[in-house]
Image (cartoon, rainbow over all chains, first blue to last red; front, side):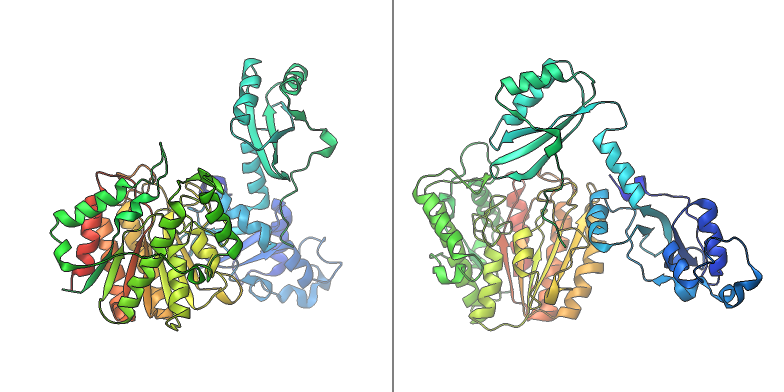
Length: 225
Length: 316
């Protein structure tokens, strides 16, 4: 999965000389939060977010539209004055995994996507990454998620997959969490069916522990912070 | 013609990995025959191996880890730390021999007896972490070599250039906070290959920030991409770093015929790549270069690749 396939390609951009008030109107009109700043035929020079603009304008001002007489000096503020220069970027040839691992640590909402020469090719936002992840999970199709606690030894997955396949149930996806407890992993098959009671009993009969849904968490990964 | 050393010892074949494993003793036979058939053996200084002292291995690996490895081997276990790491009763001794041979080779280069060398060792090393065996690797040969150059020979700047098609996670992690060892690796993009690390944004940590560099190659990109990446990433980094000694982790598994990878580097691409590394060693390190075998599993292709590799080391 490449960034080029998941990014937003039609990106609204601004120039460093664009007024901040105009940038604010663009964000509101298109209901977006990031504007890459480009000049000279598409070379990226920065990014400006709704938060940058809120900080630049008087508190009461962000929610109004157009230029007000009381805008005063605010009308003179340019995008180039308040944008983030040299933002962290990704390349169209990077993979979604590359982007996920970076966005987790960088505390930004979007990466501008640029080619080798520095020309803007698109924007990859947290929302785009979520969409890619949703597609991998297969959860746009109706189905049921199971949680199964499995001993960490060879061949367990085959038993689970065989048991589910014998019930004529299709898989949307299977996630494996290796950070459960020692020598155990949690397997989460997303099954494209509403009818899982039989297969749950079957799996329990094979000796697997079906996890209580209230104990499910995918958040046992070591935290960086 | 340069004075090139060749670390080769029949006992490197004693690490037996069992059936259905790609990292087999026959790899060394193929490599030896390739060098022999090219008529290069007589020009090489053959270096025999002797077991390394544990103190050198413990420059890089935790003492507990070395103990665990020794015990696992003694107790007759058939795998160690990961199912990939299949082993036999001689594996621990063989791994000690590989390290010992490499240290001996380094001593001879530093003493000026030889200019450079190829070390055809098994088991390989670059996936081995400080306390964990992974990916057919037990002791991190290249990392121990770098630590030895620092400790025994007081070198200030050592570069490890890893051209195995897989990322050398162990080597990177061991030195990622160290600004005196530059780790460069070019490998198949981690979203498509073991071990899943070595992403382009991994560039070293803390004091080592800027002293790790990863070039990632997408499936099928081949020679042209290697040429672009080496010029863009490695050559410029070495100009800044000015290494005093080059350690090459050489894997022959990026070759188009090797079914462990998809990057499709050609035989000519391999030669070109090695010529660049020799040129870098000449420019910055007075020609001091040691290449250490990592992967490379296509037995029919290994003789040619190893023969070319040694030929390039010998060329002036």
